[in-house]
Image (cartoon, rainbow over all chains, first blue to last red; front, side, top):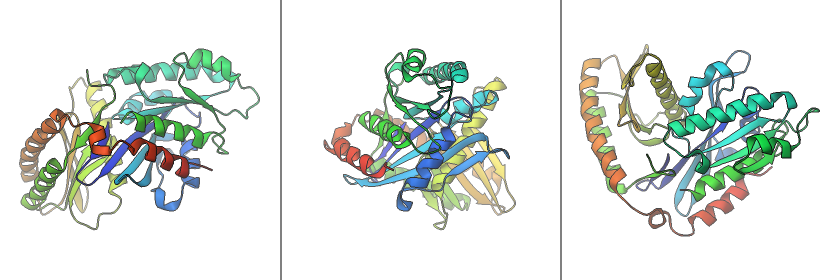
Amino acid sequence: MAIINVGVREIHCKIVYYGPGMCGKTSNLQYIHSQVPREAKGDLLSIATETERTLFFDFLPLDLGKVRGFSTRFHLYTVPGQILYERTRVAVLNGADGVVFVADSQRDKLQEDIKSLQELARNITRQNKKFSEFPMVLQYNKRDMPSVLPSTVMDKYLNPLSWQRFDAVATTGVGVFDTLKAISKLVISKL
Amino acid sequence: MDPQLTSLIVPPDEVAHIDECLARLVDDTGGNYALLLDKSGQVIASNGDGNRQDTTALGALIAGSFASSQQIAKLLREKDFRMLLQQGVRENLFIALIEDQWILTIIFNKGTHIGLVKVLTKKATEELASVLERVRKQARSRDEVLGSNFRTSMEDTIDLLFRD
């Protein structure tokens, strides 16, 4: 839930990057952290295993400065993608104002993408929200891999609701900021 | 069912009530620091030791930790865990849930008895629950608070900041 604190003139929004294991959620945040000016970002906090798999979440606070007198902050989170962390994903999704669903574009990952999206739909619905109206954008990541499905095919399985979607290669930054801009504007439009 | 796309608008007079409540809690318990968070991890107000760094990360971690404990509660077929205590060497952390929306945290050291913290935190949560109730009922329009050009200005800022 976005917080508009009129007393201190601050607006806070929470955006969560969701998707199956190793699809590129953490890579998105790492790239954003590397590019955003120092004064606009906090530290990238990662609670991960020794092998750098996300264990709980990654967290990146972004400060957009004052807009019309309001200090505006976006808090970006990723969820852990591995199957065993399903309950942890529910916890991290708590209070989210918008979601970026990151899908792995490789042919053999489509089933995992579909399952993860179905799980997201269940979790959003359990928060008493309508999934079809929830602020969401899709990112089809890993477009540089050899065995990727065409985006139009992925749309058929992952995007029946016609969300905005962006092709990406998160490790090099392609599509990362386009995705972030889209979800940010969508969340703000719903404030 | 909650409204689909809700923001919580906390007006200045309620922010003042919250500040007063946190200040009283820190004073009465002899604690070091109190934080009021939304369950999403965002800091609504704080009071106490002014040298605390990185309350943003603290808020995110405390809320994550508390949300995780709620999931544990569900697995144990409890409705929820309404309080959490973390004991450290120098400082302890006591966390309490307010109306399934806010999280009150008090950081205190060994000089303060946990029993006193629990009793006074319960009082503070009741007071803050009333604040939350009033905030929820207030039907201020967002445009009235943010101004009609806010979204356009915001989009311009987003375009400027989020680019390679």
